[in-house]
Length: 260
Image (cartoon, helix red, strand yellow):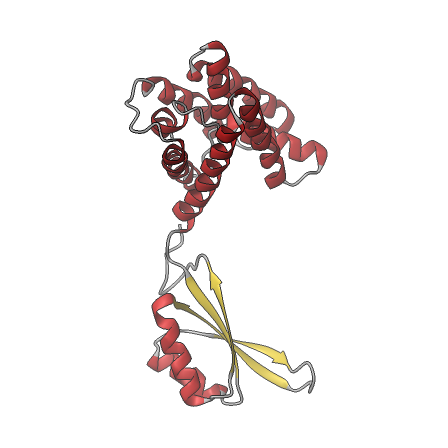
């Protein structure tokens, strides 16, 4: 995260939100080292959160509040590979997203405005996601006033890339499909899925909305490369079968990803 901040975002005056974004703005206005600004904001926010929210976010938030600015200070003289703001927004967003994704997978925290958002959430009733968006939005609007509106737009691109990268780190590329199958030949389809496709399934009890008749609904989760085979198997048994396919981002359990 610190390397991406110093390589891409800060040198190109791109504030993607958070305390790091504020430190970029303050450096432009006063010349103050971003790490100093981050310490000056992170530590009081952490202490305020400790007082108002209690200590449930634990030692990890305290460590993150101190260590991230330290890493920013250590990597402050790292080279700048590009001064193209679009490339900087994209690659800076990827780097920060990778770092945050790893932190979140370890159930950690970098402190900062994330804790401030939790305070806002608790005392206003606003959703946590909206509370985070409020603070990030204020930082990006401030960057439009201090730098240029174009810089703020690049900041929005960087923030979008960061959130998508976090999702990839936490969920991965192992997208799967969940299929719900309704058929008058459920026994034959069940055997085809179990023995030909070699996938488990779950049978749910349902009833027709119009007829009121009891129906078996088969639910099966398959990998992307098994979707065509599943459809072929179902169609070969019952061309009139009703099949619903939807995407699922993560599947834990036998035949898929292990539980973390």
